[in-house]
Length: 171
Image (cartoon, rainbow, N blue to C red; front, top):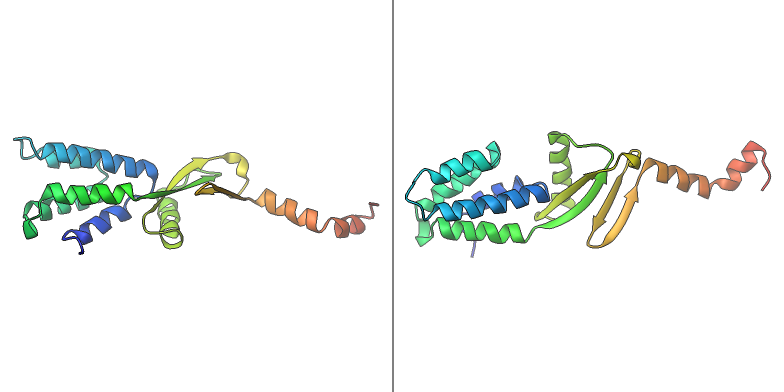
């Protein structure tokens, strides 16, 4: 059965680009769950404003509003449980790049990962300036490095004899 909050849940999960953002979302959901039992009716709104980015916070607020309406007998507790379940299904692609990606670059990387790895995939991004124009990836225990230096070494190794002949050197 499809969730009553499927549209909101999908939008929230699209905003989770990194493992760090997933951890922050999980923490925020915990805070919102505990706020359900407080007399202060504005506690949830304050948590959203203080804990979430603007774009994610707006969608979390929309989820809370839909859940508070009690559609189909389900309330915020059930909506947060569904969201918590989706967060726990996240898989992480570890990548190291030579620079800290901008927000726009992070969005493009995340969209590529969602398309090529899976909709529940996020990034764990590290910066390694020694990569010289490339990327190092670790996925489910498999390691792959693609860098400009590595490509040049590969071509030189493959074409060594031709290069040496052209340079007039002996083997």
